[in-house]
Length: 200
Image (cartoon, rainbow, N blue to C red; front, side, top):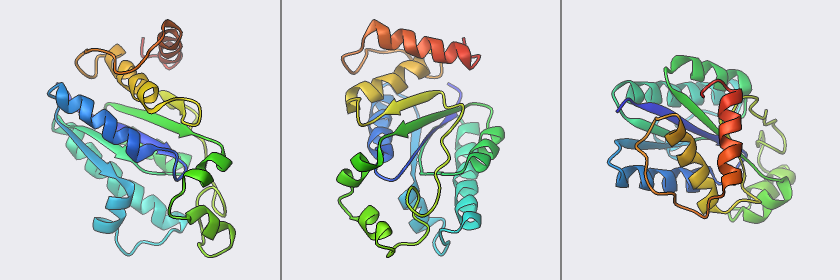
């Protein structure tokens, strides 16, 4: 099986790591070679010392993108969970890859604040955290994500299944049983999006 990069993007607390780990588990069950690159872990181990300026954020994303490219090139499915707030750098990283799927996780700010057990949004709104994405620094929504999930409306199971079914439909991963309560309407929605993007 050929490798590829599956890139989860979205505001802090939108569910990137949760869904990435769930998708990883399903792929492992199907015998897929997979590696997860989590934005927080990369910050600690590969990008320590970088600030949250636009330049340093882009450097961080380039590092993640380069590692994911190497893994994908060697037959590994690389799942990335990173805020990656800027369109231009996401576009740049996509261009490095032969096979790249973007998943945009979207949710209203009020929902994200409620999920924030670390209190980051509260601190950012109080001015205690500078350059915080969604508060004092912009998040530029993807224009061409292969999968768009409203994590305030969809369950984890449905969200994971939407990602898996998308990858199955374009033959990026082996087919298997659905993992959630999946409807024909959802299947039609995925096919329509993939057709719009030129996959099918």
